[in-house]
Length: 314
Image (cartoon, rainbow, N blue to C red; front, side, top):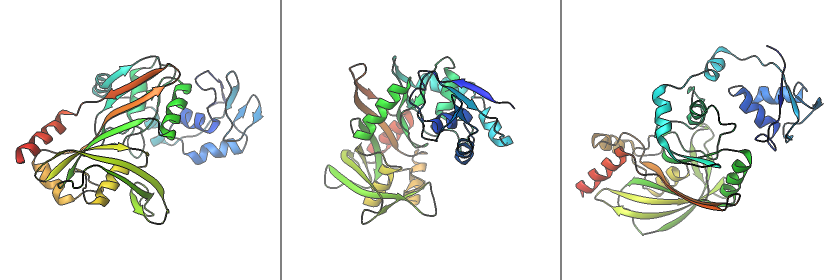
């Protein structure tokens, strides 16, 4: 292994050096990245920098050799299967000079890690190796299907992040929940935080102890023992919709983390083998091209079959 030198491109202009290195080394732990920056092993134009230093086009980055373990190296070199690449190619709903929009299938994580060698973004880069830049603008849970945005340049990525941060992107999901929804449209505000013992689980907390999560739930159809809801999320907290609905007493069907496990078993016998949560619609204006996007992703066939079974049971 040897020292490598990299010249900052226009797509990397404005990116923090720590984020650049995390992408460059992929599976290397953050602690290692911050250690080599702190020790001065990483230099920009021969100068030491702090982790939050923002790169400027044309600068030269000194990248030191970093040892990786076998598992990380294997993940970094993982090759997407032909079937996965074909699935992603067929999932593209829209592409222009600024963004790519996919209808993500359920079961596919957006990022590799936690025992998964490849996520959507790593596989998509293999599908489109000639793209100079492609990054996720936001995330979806592994078991959630539907609309996911990819940015084709850093300015576009920053613009999409600003829209999400400022609440200027209208995001709608469809969820099938247990029970008959009561009370019509409801705007729900709760404070959420990660559970102390499980970092990948979230709970409702009191007294402003967590982060505010706000959603608008609107019933679309009410069946004998379930309800189809349109969910407009006004914030983007981890597992927001799933936790709020479970707390309200209407768990999403097929939710193996926050749902009703006996109900999930019963619905599996009726054909539902996944979480019934689908990112169905996105609306936003991108100032840099003056275009208003109104994007829709149709329900996957397995969720359509579940709705048909729910109507039949009613």
